[in-house]
Image 1 (cartoon, rainbow, N blue to C red):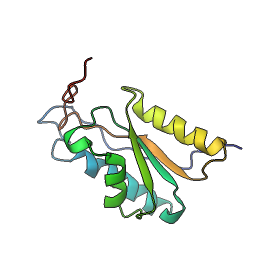
Image 2 (tube, rainbow, N blue to C red):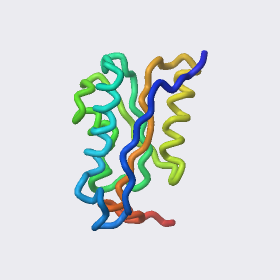
Image 3 (tube, rainbow, N blue to C red):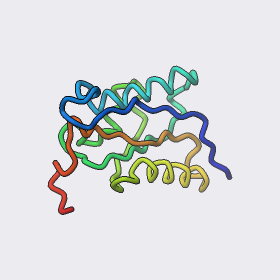
Length: 132
């Protein structure tokens, strides 16, 4: 079985400081905007989406509490959609995509949304007390 990427979308980038251009936008808003754009651009029946996998390094504060599930709820993807947030540091978004592709290639799932989110303007690196 093959895994295909049907669409990709990203937020604009800004300086990761408290006065950066994206500082007024919460990480949940960033991710919700992307999920809503995917739904609208592809006329996506969200009941077909089986999982949402999101890489996020500093999972605390506004990025804590499984930001993937919160964003799925905020973008009206439906109560059926499970979601997971993972941390593999700089490769978190890529790891999310890799895991989604592996689930599809194994036949476990058919349609997964995967990617990453981080707001260093609002949730500075190291805020979670990481040993590194």
